[in-house]
Each structure stands twice: as C-alpha cells, then as structure tokens.
Length: 359
Ligand code: SF4
Image (cartoon, rainbow, N blue to C red; front, side):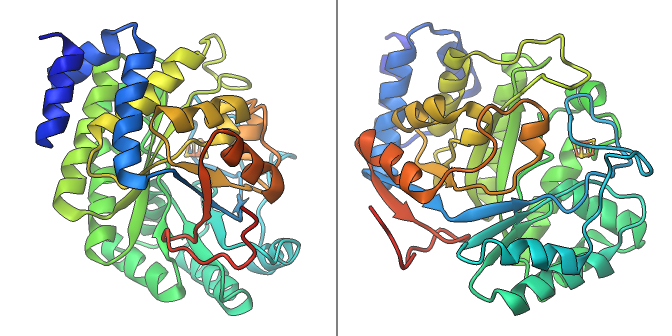
C-alpha cells in the first residue's frame, strides 16, 4: 500500500493521520495528489463554499519589548517610526470603514500598556460599531498584559471578554516547539503557554484561530509537531475556528538571508494542514502573505476561507507582503467565483448574514 492509499484508507475510516504518515506525505513530490486528497476533505466540510469577511486589520501599536528575528514590524519606544493609537484614534480609524463586519485588533508587546487600554479600546469599538465583531490580541499579547498588570491569564481573558472581545487572534504560535522558538523569538511565551492560553480562552467561551509561521529555520518534523499539538488541543476543547498557515516573508527581517517557502511548499502545507487538522472547521488562505494568486490556488488545495478585504494591515506589509493593502469586495468575489466556488460572507464567528452579498 503506498502512502496515498494508506491515507485514503485512514480518511475513509475517519481516522486521524499519524505522525509517520504525515511526514511521508510531506516527503512526496506528488503535490497534485496531496491536493486532491485535501480538496476532498475540504469539499466534505464546506462544499463549494468559500468564506470571506469584510474586515480590516488594526495594528494599534508597533512598539514592542521583544525582538523576534522574523519580525519586520516592531519598533522600540522612542524610534521615530514607532506609533501608538489611543482608543479614540482607533475609533477614528474605524469610522473610515464603517461597513466592515470584523476588526482584527493586534499589535505588539508595548512596555506600558495594560488591561485598561485594551478594555477601553474594545468597549469603545463595541459601543460605536455594535455590528462589528472584534477578533483581537494574540496569546502573546494576553500574556504580556498579565505581566504588565500582574494579573492571571484568566483574569485578563475574563476582562477582555466582558469588554466585548469575540475571538482571540491566532498569532504568536509561530512553531510550537521551544527549540525553534528559542532561536527565532527567544523572548516570546513558550509553546505550552501559548496552548494553555487558548485552552483557557476556549473554556471561558472565547473561540480562537491558530497560525503557523513556516518556511524559516524549522524542519518538517517541527511543522508536524505543531499541527499535532493543535489537533490535540482541539480534540479537547473544540474552540478553534480556523487554522492559518503563514508563509515566512524574509524582507526587512533579521532572517532576511533565508528565502522563505516557495509556492509548492506553501500549497503542500495548506493541503497537509487540511488533512491533519480534521477537527478544525476551516483552513484559511491568508492572501496578504501568500499573494492573491497562490491564495486562490490554495482554495483547490484544502483552504475554504480567503480571509477578507483586510484593510489597514501593516505587519505583513513591512515584511514584504506583495499584496498587503486591501482587496475590494468585488475583486474578492470575482476571485472566488472564477476559481469555481461560491462566496459566503461570514462574520467573526463564521455566522452568515452579510446583507450586501454580491455573489
Ligand atoms: S512578532 Fe510580535 S512580539 Fe515579536 S517583535 Fe514583532 S511585534 Fe513584537
């Protein structure tokens, strides 16, 4: 039995793929066959639907105490390119795009910002734009707030939820293996803490996403380890909505000498994540970092979510994201329909109901 027959048999039985099978799949050069398997799974889950949101990113500050080697976004306090938006400025920014369904509110580990700032920002957003879902703060930011304010993770999460946080952002996962984290983001929280924060969020009724930054110094075993740890937590809590594979973009980073993953690696990783994470409802093709063409192709390799209009994104842009301004709704819908899918406008919790669907 070759690896594909073996995996087909596992899929038929609904059995989760095993570590060795996943590694053999990664080792295969038959990208199309891997893609076909992933497409089958994605079709079983989502039919011909591709989800998208009218959303914007709001990177409230780039001032960070950490120095992750892959990051082109952060600045030290006092740097002339550093900035911090106060809650009123966040509202002013959002007033420029009142039609959105979702705001993705993430920034950096600012040395002095505590819970009060975040609660004020989130509750103001909810008061001014009650229809907008707030997906925000990564586990790394949550841990940082707990340190600044000397509060437990649980206290921080409960307060953020009370302020109106709808979902926790999936960033900061990078590769969930500490030997890799020590080399690329030594000041960041451990793999275990990242997972514990998501677990705590899920038990408090806050859903989340999970990312994986791949194509830098990690090996394939490390990616597989990452996927398996996510699958295990999802088995326990069911609180993840989407997995977001993020190809590493080397420009303007301390890892600029690395090339980043090529298109084949990106599509293979999307497809393998669909096959491994059988318990994740959605796989996102994040076009800001993949590029629009590859992201639409990823829809045929297991992805069922094209993210959204993504106004205002800065993090991928600083690292050389080729398409990181925004996409208008018409272009997004055309991309989805031209690839043979049906666009479905979602809100932050993947509920349908966008009023001005154009598809
Ligand atoms: S990746 Fe996040 S935590 Fe790391 S330096 Fe950049 S902004 Fe700071």
